[in-house]
Image (tube, rainbow, N blue to C red; front, side, top):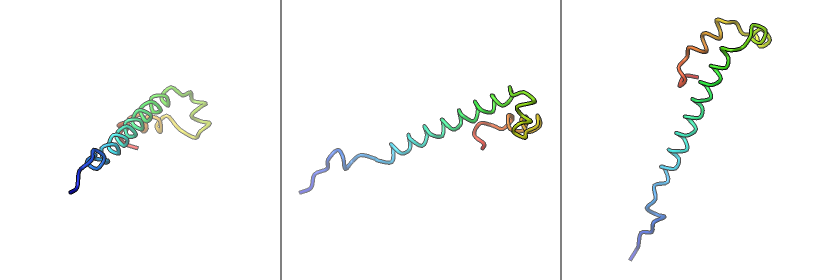
Length: 67
């Protein structure tokens, strides 16, 4: 006779789902934060990294879920 234990009935995919969701939300927050920060850079800062204001506008207008 076999018995089911709590361990064998556990859905191990749920933990992976929550971990993936947490990571996705973290990435989205970071994208939003860094794009917002980019809009406050000076002309000199942008020049130093080879960006123009049109590059900033293009990046800042992207939705947070798009890389």
